[in-house]
Image (cartoon, rainbow, N blue to C red; front, top):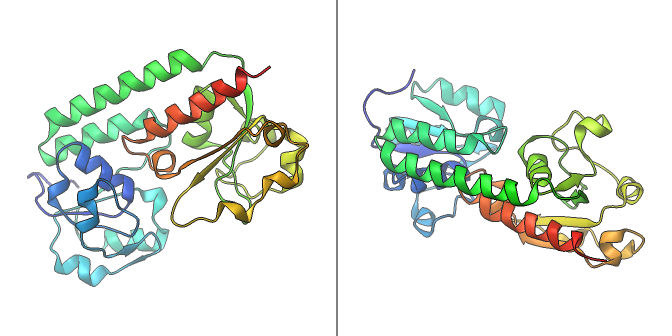
Length: 263
C-alpha cells in the first residue's frame, strides 16, 4: 500500500531510481542510496546503505524513510523480501521495456507531489524516443553484438537492451526469439560470436570494468573487428533505465547508422 502523503525521506536503492527522482525534482528528499549511484553530481553526497546484493537494513530503519524506491529485478530476491518486512511503502521503478521509463517517472511524480515536472520530463522522453525510432528503426538492419560483460562473456537476448538495438535499426545477433534463448543475459562463447558475424560490437563499460579482458583484435575474421567497428561507451547511459538512457540509445543508433553507410 502506497503512502498517502508526499514522502519527505526517500531511500532509493538502485542508481536509476536516484536519477529518476532527481529528474522529477525530488532528489533532495533522498536520505540514502547504494553504491554506484553517482548521477547527477549531487547524488555523490547521499549516504550509502549497501549495494544490489547487500543492504544495511538497520541503518535504513534508523533513517526512518517514508518511501523506498528500487528496481525489483535489480535487487537480490532475499533482500527485497527483507525490505518488505520493514513496513515502509516500496515502489518499483524498474522497467521491462524502454517505453515504461516515462510511465515510471509519472508514477514517481504523483507519489512525491511533483506530478507537473514529472509529466514534462516524461513527455520530452516520449518525444525523443519517438524521434529516434522514426529516424532509425526502419533502416536496413545491421547485425550487432552487445557485450554486456567481457569475462565471462555475456550478452543480451531479450528485454529493453535488445529492444534498443532493434529500435536503432540493428539486428541483435543473439536475439532470444531467433536463437531460442530464454535468459535475458545469457553467457556465450567467442565461437558463437564468430558464427554470427556481427558488423558492429558494442561494449558499454562501467564500475571499473576491464574491457581488455576480451581482446577482439584476435579475431579479425569478424566483420566488426575487420572494419574497426567497435563502440566503447559509457555503460551508465545505456544500462541504467533512467532519463539518460536516450543518450546511450542515440549513440547506439548513430554507430549502427555509421556502419550501415560503409561500402
